[in-house]
Length: 282
Image 1 (tube, rainbow, N blue to C red):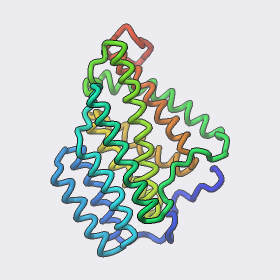
Image 2 (cartoon, rainbow, N blue to C red; image 1 turned 90 degrees about the vertical axis):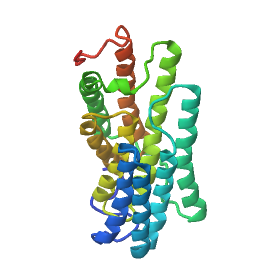
Image 3 (cartoon, rainbow, N blue to C red; image 1 turned 45 degrees about the vertical axis):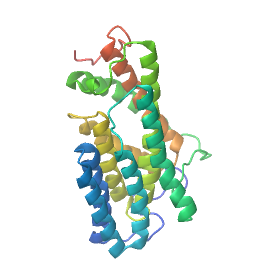
Image 4 (cartoon, one colour; image 1 turned 90 degrees about the horizontal axis):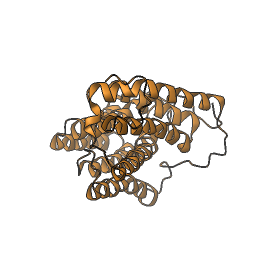
């Protein structure tokens, strides 16, 4: 384990005692709101769950309330737009502005209103990658190459992304896939997970952040049996971040998956391009 990494079962910044059920309930209500907002696309139900969760937090733990407000702010901002893939100029601008706001606003509120430094984006860790980290990245490449074509091409999930038939559209797809992948780690890991692990044992914080992560990916296009892939992915990203404390590493892992997904999507709409997937079921 990298120097400075916390024991997986411990919370950070607060005593590691098991949290009271009502504190956990408050956080769970806010996280489950993502299922309604993004999974079911029931905005009113999602907003109601956020309000109830914040009320419970206000009654039991004011510090938790402050941090759930930050997470809720990001969720509400994201919910103002459709997450359906859109490679038009307007669509890409909408994604860039909305998702950037969902990261910048909670960070700014935490840093300059709350005067906290819990939300961090650890880039320069000063640590070299360990054998475990190189090995895990190699495993990601092999697993992604073998499993992802079966999901995207076999289930037809690739149809949740626009047809990319020209070079300009392929470039836009590359930018979009990698941009959202980077954003995922900034919001779900560096903001949601970081705030939650300040109050709960790491395993509980990780489970809670995965609910939001997977719900977002569902609306983005990872439907059908996609959660069988996205749930363990979200949990592993939280675990790896907790272990390495390195944003560049978890981003590298994520963008490695995204590079494979990009190739699959290009191949799906252009069978003669990127024809390298041995597990293509078509």
